[in-house]
Length: 275
Image 1 (cartoon, rainbow, N blue to C red):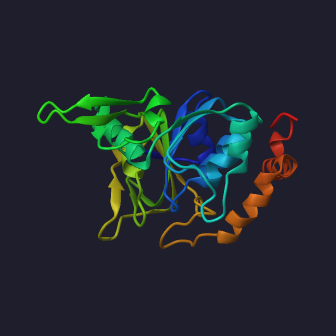
Image 2 (cartoon, rainbow, N blue to C red; image 1 turned 45 degrees about the vertical axis):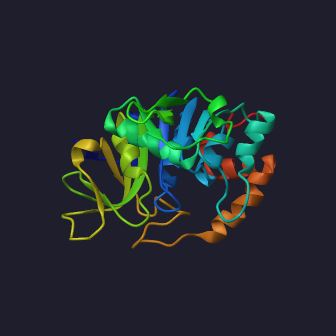
């Protein structure tokens, strides 16, 4: 059953060096506060999973905490490239980054397979691409009914999934709405689940279309108002477009990024990233 606790304690208990961590949220409800706590605690050698790595993963990669990225698209949405991501891939700075790239459909199906307790998922896709030749997590299967050859993608089961949501109740249930992406599937596929929320309420009021994660699917909840900034939480905040635009200049230059890291996480000044 989920427990409500401070974010620092929840991250320290649930996320460990070497873990595979999914931090999901599509444009909306992206768990930035939890990612920043990972940087503060210097949890390293992570394999990060995310359908759309954007600024949240640019920061973790630039901080030198990531050894592998499993993804289906990467960029600073509406702005351009992820420069810390590119520097790691192209130049190995601050450390080399291993990639496992998929299509959006492939990644979504990998989560669904993991959430369903299945070893793989089947879809029509990957034809005309060379992605299947670049990863061991894409293969083909033949339909036993029609003989059609289909793509197969291995299930993904993160050690930890982290999401942000609008609300949790005091019994430990979580509720979110708006652009919900694959948060539910990523949570159900994981061994451990951490949810940051805008607020803890006594009871949920009726809301059509909301997704509810029962308390038994969640290990820890942390009340972190604004925990999705600079992304947004429908009903609580709006997207900070200026922040995304400003990040481009910060991330583009190693010195500017290192200064940002030192300024934002001052306790990590010593040895945060190599020179």
